[in-house]
Length: 105
Image: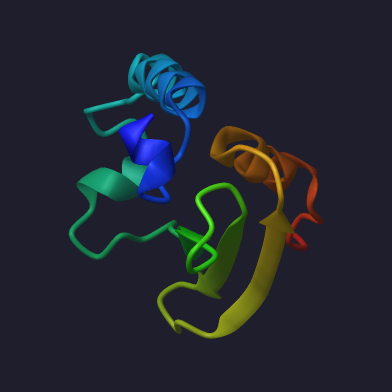
């Protein structure tokens, strides 16, 4: 309750996030799996991307998720997508799988 009074997410939401974090942790790959990862020049790597999820200031529920993709090694802009969601954070991240894919290089 103290978190809610201070503007933090409800305990139920925190519990959901902890379970989701544990589920995702089980899928982390901590070794190189692609040929380009073992090449100092990263030959074969064609795209790089970054993701950020931020809460709306003063709101512990609404979040904005953004994805940016660049070509590699040119680092030219390929795609930017942003999604704002009024539900819990894990739900805000799920639409990424449905957004348009990049054209084949």
